[in-house]
Image (tube, rainbow, N blue to C red; front, side):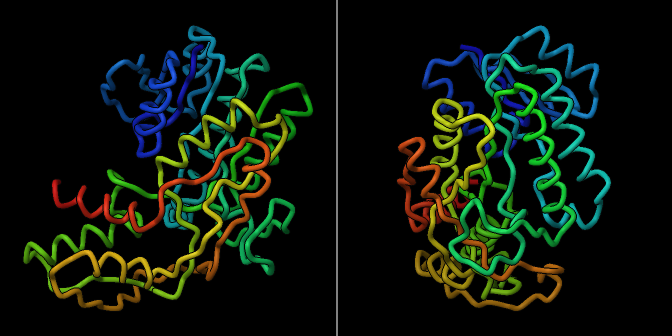
Length: 301
C-alpha cells in the first residue's frame, strides 16, 4: 500500500516514516527541505505550488496521505500570519485537490483551535475560540477539510496536543530545556533560561503520536475530528524539575520575560476518550521516559 507523507523531513515525519516502513508500507515523501531518507521516494516541493503538488501526487496515486506539512509554531504565526494562513489552509487545499477522493487522508490540526477552554480536560465538542493567528489558521483548515468531506473525500482530522521526543529542535520547550541542562553539565552556560513555568500542557511522546496517526487512518472515521493526546497535564516547572533531577549538575533557573508568549494559553489538556474508543490506541511512553531520552539525545549530540 502506498503512503505519502507531506513534511516528511520534519521531526514527526521522520518517526512516522520509520513506523510505516515497519508496517510494510511503500513510503513516499514531500518536503520543502531536501533530505535523503532511506527507503523513501522523496520529492522536493512547496505545498503552495499547486501544479507541482498535483504532478507529484498524480504520479504516485497514494492510497493514504499523512498531511503533516504546516507552519507549526505559534511564534511564527504571530510573526508571519499571512504565510501561516497560506501554508495551513491553501497548502492543505492543494494537497486535498491533488490526492482526490480515492485516498484516505489524515490532516493534522492542533489543540490551539480551542483557545482558553472553560472545561478541562478538553473534549472535541468544546467551544473553538483560537486566540492566535496559528490557532485561527488551524480552525480554518479544519473547516476546509469538513467541506471536502461533504463532497465525498475520505479525511480524518487529528487535533494534536503537544508532543516531543529525541531529535526535536530546541525551538520547542521540552527539547530546549533538555539541551540547556546538558549545556550546564558541559559548562557552556550557568542556568536554564525559561518563560512562564506555570503554563500546563498535555505532553505526548512522538513515538506514541505516530502510532496514533497510523491507527487514525486505519480505523478513524471520515469527517471525524479526534483529540490525540495523553490526557495528562504537566506544568513546565514540573518538566524542568524532572530534567534537573536526572542531572548531577546544579540547575538554576533564570526567568526570561522575552520567552513569555503573547496571549499564552495557561492550560491545554485534552480528553482522548473518543480516539481511544474508536481505534484502541493508548499512549505507552510516560513523560519521564520521554524526557530521559531527550536528555540522552542532547548528551550524544
